[in-house]
Length: 151
Image (cartoon, rainbow, N blue to C red):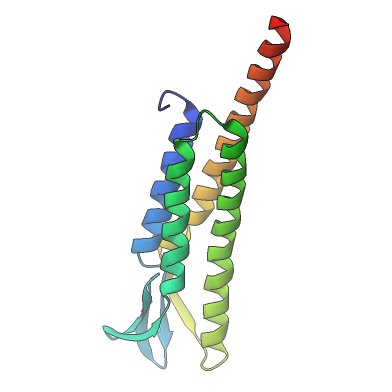
């Protein structure tokens, strides 16, 4: 299981999504106050201004799905399907993040000061998942070619 490189890619993708769920996503000015955007909420001066628990749920679900996919090593096609669904979840993370920013910026103007490490992690996780899908596909092709040789 862990001796395959795609398992390492999937574990790293799970870790990246977990990091995205617990670290700050951005710091910006909100009504001349500094606001911290995390996956669980937007904090203005240390007080919760807006709850964004959906981002945390998407990030945690993506992390759990990547971990579950590692243990499906006997069913490679199901592993590929779960990985594709996981990529869709990660894209959904960004879409929901954009929706929240749009919803906030339509009320007040936002000035980003710093982009956090958490917003970069889903891109890394998507790249790692694509690499895992390619390696899983290569394993499946190898198994199928060996099955033809046995006949």
